[in-house]
View 1 (cartoon, rainbow, N blue to C red):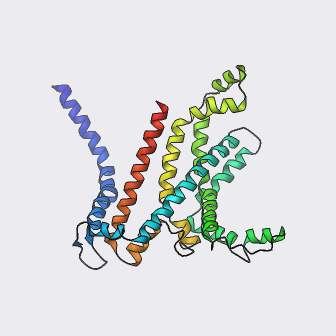
View 2: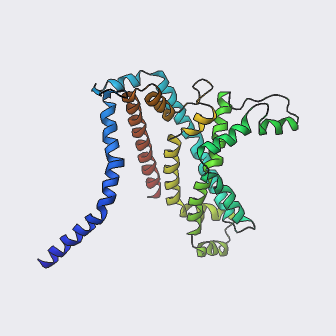
View 3: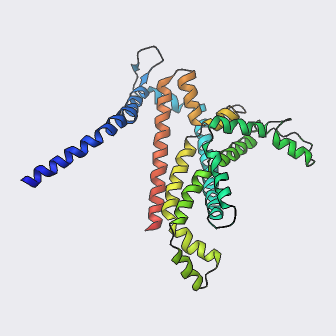
Amino acid sequence: MKDLFSKKGDHLAAYLFLAPFLIIYGMFMVYPIIKGMKISLSEWKFGLDPEFVGLKNYKTMLSDGYFWEALGNTLYFVLISTPVLIILGLIVALIVNSGLKGTVFLRAGFFLPFILSISVMASIWVFIFQPYTGLLNSILHNLGVEQEIFWLNEPNLAWMSILIATVWWTLGFNMVLFLAGLQEIPKEHYEAAKIDGAGPVRTFFSITLPSLKNVIVLIVVLQTINSFKLFGQPYLMTEGGPGTSTRPLVQYIYEKGFVEQDMGVASAMSYVLFAITIIVAIIQFKFFTGKQD
């Protein structure tokens, strides 16, 4: 009986310590989620009382061609950015972890862009990509290219420009995660492989890559979620253009909610994006954990 009261006392103390975090988490995470679901079922503009309309906002969303275009743009960016950022992150981490001279400088150089704000990053790359006076076109002109290239005004080039800027900006985060995983691999494994006569390629595929499987799962899921949240790069570099060809779903949700003040439809779109992101993350976990088994 005494042990039972002692355990209850321990549980009570644990809940008291957790209470501040749970209260803040509930206020800023759980309540907005519930409130957002309620708004998605209502017709609401700022300054007016919300009116319950059931699934009308979801029907409006499904019949909106711009919604499907923005969702397609988001999925396209996820497909082109996720593999590039993961593979390049691993390559850079391998270079930095190789022990060559100057790796400390390289490590700092690759990670520094990640600490910049998105407005600074976008300003730098707009200056690089702009026509006539941009840095990239000036270099190409000096190399003999006479044609003026409008990097941000042609859909394919605009997507490539957004991808390059995103890789430059966020590659350092994936590099740090891969680097932490590489430094956890025991050196004895490499020594044993060397004694067995394994070359660099065989060592990479038989030791390095399998040892990084948990890190790879983490980076794939985090990177996919971040790519689904694309907003600032196209908003600041191309304004979603030319036309609406680079407008992602998050930007369209922002315009729907805060420009058109159609908060109900914006909330419905947000929940659809949330559901798609969760489903893709679950599929990725199932796929990689299945591979591990």
